[in-house]
Structure formats: C-alpha cells, structure tokens
Length: 473
Image (cartoon, rainbow, N blue to C red):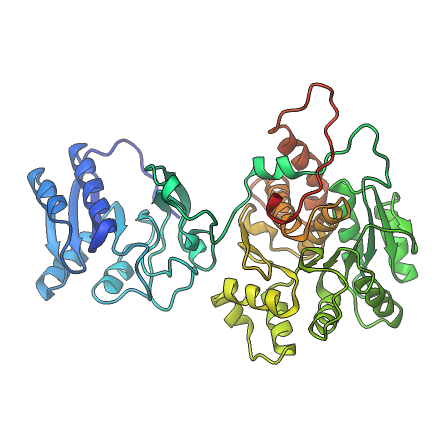
C-alpha cells in the first residue's frame, strides 16, 4: 500500500536510482524538474558513467549526487533511501538483460515498504522483450514509458511489477517496426469488433453454440459456461451432458436447448470428467471442422488428436483455454518436462510453444491473460481485478469466447475480446469486493452495452455483423 500523501512537491525527499544510458539520463532530468519545484533530490549512481549534462544540471540546482559504488557511498545511499518519499528507477532500460547486480540489487531491496516507485520505461531487472526475470528487479507503482510500450509491460511476470502504465509520445511512431511483438485490445477495439445483430438477424444467424460441459461432480461448470455464452449474446445454446446436469442448466438458463443439433461452434470440456458418452461427443466435435473453444476436460483429447495430425480446422478455429498447470500438463504429454512453475516463470515462451506444437490458438489464463497462435502473434489482456480468481470464473470466460466464435469471430480475436469483457464484467460485479462466477456472467450484458456505446451507431440503426479474422483484419 502506498503511504498517503497530501500537499505538493515542495519539501519532499526524492531519491533517483541512476544507471548509464537514456534511462539514467531521464531520471536525472526528472530530478532537475522536481528540484525546481522544491523537492530535496538525491541521485544515487549505481552503474558506470551517468549522463554528464544531467549530473551537472542537477548539481546546478543544488541536487545531491552520491556514488553508491563505493562502501562510503553505499552507506549514504542506504540512508537516503530510508528517508525517501519517492523513488525514481532509472537503472537500466530496454537494452538491459538479467536481474540487477550489485550495488543496484541491494539498493532496490532497501526501498522501504510503502514508498512509491516510478520506473522509467520499464522496471529495471526484467527482460524487455519477454517479461522474464532471472534475478532481483524493481517493483514499480507507476511506469512511465516513452515512444512505445515495451513488450515486458504487457508480459507476465514483468507486467505485474510495472504498476500503472503511463505512455508519453515522443514522436517515434513512424520509426517503429510495422508489426509489434505483443498487442493489447482496448475497450474501443473490442467494441469495434463485437458482433452486433442487424435487424434482419434471427437466433440461428446470431450463432448457435454447442456446449459439452459439466459432470455429476461438477454440474456448476456447465451452468456457468452456458450462462457466459447466453449473457454474451449468442443466439442459441445447445447443451449436451448428463441428465442431472441438463436439469441444472435448464433451471439456470431456460433458453438453452438440450440435445444435439446444428451448431456453428463448440464449447468443450468445462467440468467434464471421465464419461464415455461425453468423451465420444467431444471427439465428434473436434473432428467436425467447426470452431471449438477447448477447456479443462477436453484439453487432453484435443492435444492428442492435433499432435497426431488430426486437424480438421486450422489454428484460428481452435481456442484452447488452459491455466498454467494445465498448459504444463499438455506439454508434458508431448514429451517435454515442464512444470507449472516453469510456465509461470516464462508464460509467453510456453504459450507459444504449445500453440506451435499442436497448431492451435492458446489462451493462457492468469492475472495477465496471454493469447498466442502458431505464427507468433500475441495478445495480452489485463482488464480485471484480482477477485476474478474464483471458482467457475474460467467457465464463464469460455462461454463468452464460445459465443463470439459461434458468431464468426476467429480464435485470436475471440480470446482477447472475451478476456477483456470477462475482466470488465468482473470489475463491475466486484465494486472493489469479492465476487462469484455467476455474478461475472450476470454483469456481462451491461458490460457489453457500455462498450458498444463507445462506437458510433450508423444513422439507420442497422449495423452489419462483423465476422473477422485473427487480429481484426
């Protein structure tokens, strides 16, 4: 928790952690600006030669410089940090690699709990391109990034260390590569892609989703998956499952239709246990050539079939939705020794690995959700509160994604769009407190309505339904 602060900058004690390169220079210039507003500023030099002009300008406005590389300087640096009211991290930037080394690691560890940290471009010590960290790194409350968002700001675990992101446009847009490494859909981006029915649509043209989910042990998974799809606006849900679970689904969603019939997409596996009838139905669905959202109890069968070459639909027709433990298990099935900890440490690497191994789109669930496909495309969504980590939340997410795929949205877009809507619905339901998965589903229609207000309506009131390929192109 940040310490509560009131009043202005004047008299505040600011400590700059200054390395070489542009990040250290930016930290020094920030210190000069804060000093001009009355803050007491100390710059702690933790690397090689710092930006000479920045040092001289800070000295000219009576800022203090401490060389933290010497024993005497380190003692003074630790004393400065103990009294700090704000720390600016300018140690290393987008050319850094590996964790922080001495003396930076010791100084970062000495930042008092509750003192806000502002990072320049990225939290020092994380890998700029992968979001991985092999050692000590900064945990920022705010990261101010210049020119472009660095990939690590969207990629866990580094994204969890970045805090709130603030972007400063410095005119580099035209110089950047045409294709980014990782993307994040905004609210407007999702609204522009959402499949809105035209006046001439009916329940069949709006999308029919077959749902094979639930078991006698986990009937709620089927209920929540069906509710997620219904509340996201699918035309019809056809439910296939055990009789007792069917009763639960129809009680919660009387608009659902039991039994097989024509569908445009499938949602498979949420809450499914070993059941010969459901296993056979899942196999038929995977072989149908129709788009599939593959969750929980259907993941293993999907991986087996696709690894063996049975790929009736391409990568943009299959959205696998594992959490870290399930993804590790899938890779282990393919002969790779991978643990859940490995996936959590290198989530981008492992999500792309599975996507390429089985030629499918992979939505890796977590505090930051990653969506990866075999071509190396990545979406990163971080739109909900920590309260989303509750039983059944993933079933609702699968239902929202299934509704989108039944309406013609490709797996890549469906993964990112459903993650954003799921997160915002969770925030709406939470209001800052605990939530249940059912509340996430109930909040979905109002969440979608809020998003659609962000894009203008055509004068006729008739908006054509959007059927998009991956990446909204």
